[in-house]
Structures are given as C-alpha cells and as structure tokens.
Length: 118
Length: 114
Image (tube, rainbow over the protein chains, first blue to last red):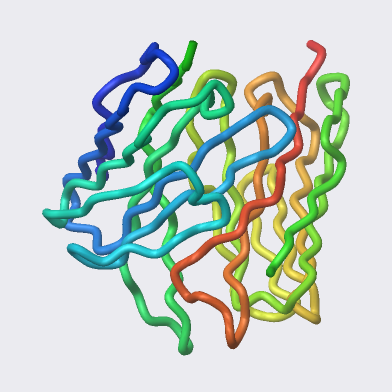
C-alpha cells in the first residue's frame, strides 16, 4: 500500500518565519504534488515535480518554493509566512504511466498539515 | 487555463435517497478521476474514466463520462451514512495541456440524515 507521510499534522508559525513542510512517499513514484485546501475553494495546486530536481509551478505558486533533492521527498517552503497562507496543505504522489498518449495515474495523498500563521 | 466546475456545492439527503454530483470542464479532458474525502480525512481515489461515454459502477456508485469528454457525473443510489464526505472530480486536460497536472473541481459536500 502506498504511504505518503507528511511530517506534521498541525503547525503554528509566526508571520515572517520561514516554514518547511516535508513529504515522503515510499512507493518510488515519479510525480509529487503540493496542494492547499481551503473551504469553498477546493484543492489548488501550488507546485509539482515529475522528477528529481525538476519542478513546475501550479496555479498558485506565489509565496512558495519547493525542493526535490531525492525521489521520495518533496518539500514545500514558505519563504516568509503570511496569515493568508493559513490553510490545510496536502502532499500527493503518483506514478508516471502512459495510456493512449497521456499520463494518467491516481494521486495518493498524505494526511495533510494544518498550518496556522499568526 | 482549464477550469473544472462542480455542482452542487452542498447536498443534504435523507438516508436512502439518491444523490448526484456533476462536473463540467471548459476544455476537453483526456480522462477524469473521482475522489472522496471523509470529514477530517484526505482525498482518496475512487475511479478513473477514460473513454467517451464510459459508464462504470462500484456497488451503489455509478460514474459516467460524457460523449464529448467535457462532463462527468457521480450518482449514488440509496445513500447511507457512510457516504458522507466531499466528492471531488479531477480532470487531465486534452492535447496541449500539461499531462502531469490534474485540475480539481471544488467538490460537493454530501451530508446524510439517518
């Protein structure tokens, strides 16, 4: 069974702090993703990575950066946390599969990190 | 960019009633996935639809993918309290889009009165 582990379930940080959210997956998945989830807004993609050291911006990358030095680990970095970054952060991973010309693979999510910035 | 709209946002039913959530994309999708998130939990993959007009069933759940591959639906027959949660659709865009990126709908929160 795929396991995606996020380092913290709850986190409280102060405005201006540098925040690291860590995610590790144990199934050798190529793709890894960071989403944030807010009431009424659903899941919004922040960044994703399809290979080690590769990253691509999602829909809302502003104020965030990522790091993928090893295949199993994908880190989300808030360079200077702000109150509008208070949210639930979800990490996910997936296999790269080729099906009829497109990559299709279910996402496996971690349990999430609820971050509060005060 | 691609947008995926999902309706309704909320649905409250009596146990035993049916439930349907609808998903519409602004662009043609190569495939669509459905996820369920229980209260306090994380999204869990339910199913993937790939072919135009495809219909798949999982017990009381029926999933459909439209002929034009721009819309999809999830229908639950005779809801139970265990069906409570938020149901999300998520689509991979067709040609020209990022093949790694799923776009999620905002989800439909289903509550069931026992």
